[in-house]
Image (cartoon, rainbow over all chains, first blue to last red; front, top):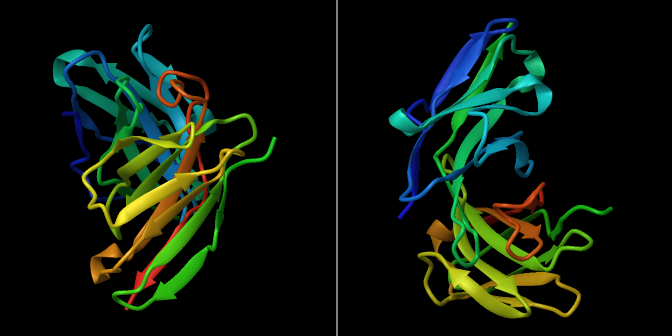
Length: 114
Length: 117
């Protein structure tokens, strides 16, 4: 069964600083990997996804993520955060069998300080 | 194109009651998946509906049930509510077989916040 671990529950960074959110996954085959963002009271918005090809994936809002098979990781990065990036971030792995469900990590809450 | 619409946005129920949550899928999508997101947790897959039938279920008891209608909208029903059912319930729609592999894949609604007291 697939699983996702996000080891950081809460991260605080200064506006303009760089950001890296960690994600480790467990999946028996080549995974589909996702990063979603959730603002308070909102649903999930897809930032980026990876399946194959270039291991560095570009997403919306200036985010990127790097797939490292050897480390079973898919970390999310942004070179310079903005106050509007404050939100909850979820890493997910997608199964291709049957209903193609998503398995999410527990999330990382990002706080931005001036 | 319209997105995924969920109703109501908030509701409060008493333990032991029953609740129905509704979801209108994005135009052109034919599957609906439901997720439960407890406070401080990631969303957990409840089940998916396709062609008006359940197409896979997560680790949830039978008192969680659903329906899908010919227009692809869906309902989530929860019987005998328990305090632990308090959560944000998210609906996601997609084209069958493209939720994960397709682009853009799943579209999520803003959710229904259920509080059980």
